[in-house]
Image 1 (cartoon, rainbow, N blue to C red):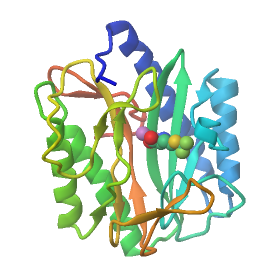
Image 2: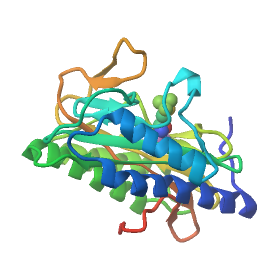
Image 3: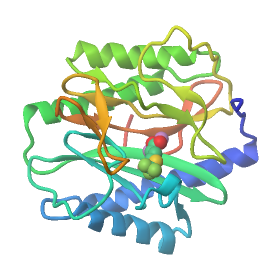
Amino acid sequence: MAVTIKTPEEIQKMRVAGHLAAEVLEVVAPHVQAGVTTEELDRVCHDHIVRVQGAVPAPLNYHGFPKSICTSVNQQVCHGIPGDRVLRGGDIVNIDVTVIKDGYYGDTSQMFLIGEVSVQARRVSQVSRECLLLGLAEVRAGASLRTIGRVIQRHAEANGCSVVREYCGHGIGREFHEDPQVLHYDDPKTSLVLQPGMTFTIEPMLNAGKRQVKVLPDGWTVVTKDHSLSAQWEHTVLVTPEGCEVLTLRSDESL
Ligand code: MF3
Ligand code: CO
Ligand code: CO
């Protein structure tokens, strides 16, 4: 599938979807505390998306995914399934929210630190957020897509973290996952030049240890092979002539 350029009408719908996805993270945030189960967080998000936003939680039934959000704890890299696991002080958890509104997708995730966490947990979460911000800073019309992966890999590795290669950012719009693939490491084969009206995600997954991952028998949950901690932050962006518009910016967030 070719990379699509969104029309002004489509961009307006992407703004709405992106804003709603960001709002879900703001709504769930006060619930992300020691003692809560990831299933309870799923219910808070699901109910807000369906009842308040009149939107659709994109993960639910996506290739058979059983819940409305992804919750990935500690050594889980991504696609964790909400369940009866209780969050405890010292845990780190990524909550990944994707909503569909008026036919368009908004996709965003962030890390939450529960109580006092280890220096390494704080570090991998912080460095992965910095990698997202460095990637965002490279987005503008005329820039190469390759640069995004290069700056992310450089920052991750300079800080003792590794970049997961099996999963990547993606074009997004009327589909959950469109072209292009947005790699979070340098790849000489990436030659796409960014144009105004392109929309895609940047969502670096960083491991505190080695980059290798495996999928658990549940068929979804991705974990680090060496059991090291993993962290991820994600935004959906629009390429503009001057730079990028972050479609999933939270109201309290500065870049
Ligand atoms: N939100 C994830 C992404 O950033 C995809 C989740 S797919 C699911 O692309 F099925 F696991 F929910
Ligand atoms: Co995504
Ligand atoms: Co996501």
